[in-house]
Image (cartoon, rainbow over all chains, first blue to last red; front, side):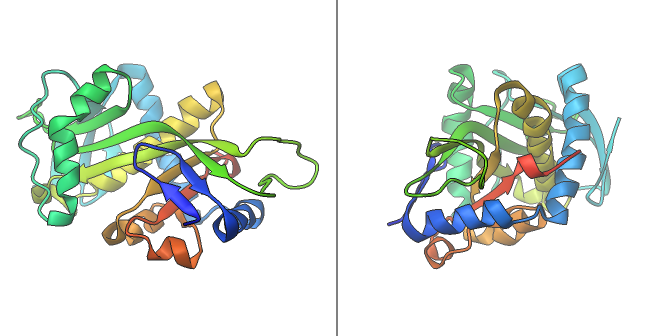
Length: 66
Length: 179
């Protein structure tokens, strides 16, 4: 086993999994979806930091904070 | 669920009702069990943080939740991730683990899961990374959820062994994302 991971524990990688992870981190570029998710999330986090909660409307998966 | 609903996203509170969540698929029953049996204890003991989504009419009855914990990705061998010119002598890389995520089966397809994942990513990027240092968000995804996490921007650790796991490891390198 070269991967050990538990929902509430660390991820341990050895052998080929560790090498692959290194290559993916060293040479990988962020996915557009990741950039979008983080940007959306930062807006939410800032709102959360102000009030300790977020009020939002969800309209067919489109989120509007306010 | 109506197309347009006013919702509240906040941290789990002691008075919240944690018994009514319906997860539908038996594969997700452990999520329901965690929420019912452990979420409040972990919250009270600072072992995890759980954030919930509620509707105003039932403000103490969460319809979705996400649980986050401190984590680490440890690599063995010659596995300096950071490339030439960066000295880092340790095998552990700080991460936040997305430990649990569930949306009530009756509220699916409204974007609540994505909302919670985005919120978690934003919280880590905006609050945790600048305060204590944290490089990755990581999740052990259920097979049924791999496509969902990929759509949120997570990357599969691309090895045969990982892909064969019941809960393959997926990650986002937050350091590379500028906001």
